[in-house]
Image 1 (tube, rainbow, N blue to C red):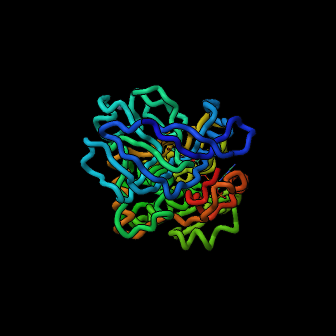
Image 2: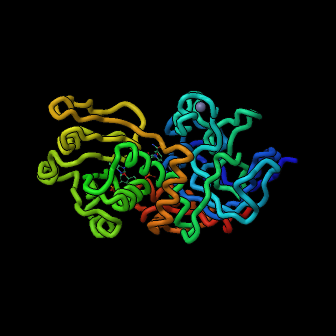
Image 3: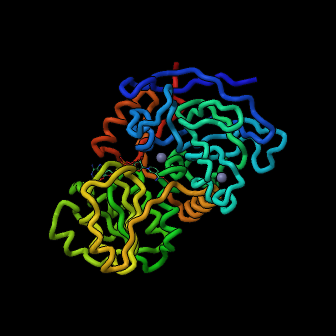
Length: 351
Ligand SMILES: NC(=O)c1ccc[n+]([C@@H]2O[C@H](COP(=O)([O-])OP(=O)(O)OC[C@H]3O[C@@H](n4cnc5c(N)ncnc54)[C@H](OP(=O)(O)O)[C@@H]3O)[C@@H](O)[C@H]2O)c1
Ligand SMILES: [Zn+2]
Ligand SMILES: [Zn+2]
């Protein structure tokens, strides 16, 4: 039997989100049925709700920073039992046999992973609906264990903002003594500061917002550079091994490239699309510097990040909201007025 679930959806780029009833699939033998307790609000939810990427299928139920409790499990599930605290991130499935999947890089699946919302389930061709809802049904392989002791609401943003910044930190082998910079102090940016600091790096924040210095230091930044101040930027030349750029919209990368050290990499995790203005290659060629991109992280790597956060007591700084406040939260997010992640208390969800 399918499961009737209440969620919040939008039906067009300009509609407000509103209560929406839909069916979740009948659980398969390897499925976990999860009661959603909390769901973080990612800037990607806003991009998708408003069709910024021109690929939204409406109605859409956003939400991919999901924390909940297992309600029941199918007969083939071995790793979870009712009552377990679990997480679900941006993916709920992938082909599982391509070269990327075999390496645990499901986010780069050659058939494209099944996204938690605005995706299509490969088995029944149904559109996937995300975490702004009461329950979700997910195959065991894409369910994460939440370590004991982590605050469950604060852990929700780890499922996207956490793993999206953890994966480049690990891929570029950041550890003690690395010099890491983060561009933009929002949801991803604040997790990048905490995780880079947790790995022992010396951490710098690039921000346009002069009011964020105190918070940035509390979150782990050793240095703050105002990206709008040319002298500040000049003083940061040749410094960073890795820059994680979380800015969601088109912006000029050229001021950041000279701040990379020899062999340094600027990795884009925020903006998708053409660069404007174009990149000047001189600082790249002169210092063997690179510009790269990175997409979330694999399932094993997500578990590794959650376990690291468990050991180091790392969670997101959150502002809890009710489901009915979601459109106001999106507007505040557009003004960079988030400290530093909204999390929806799903107990507030009403028809
Ligand atoms: N690659 C992936 O797998 C992945 C995963 C999750 C999210 N994303 C994307 O990552 C981006 C960031 O998400 P988020 O949830 O962290 O967003 P967010 O909370 O809104 O934070 C973005 C931050 O970027 C800075 N910023 C915003 N607009 C800017 C502009 N026009 N120019 C320069 N700086 C600007 C602001 O920081 P300051 O005020 O400090 O300057 C802002 O706080 C989004 O585009 C999202 O879709 C990608
Ligand atoms: Zn996200
Ligand atoms: Zn695959």
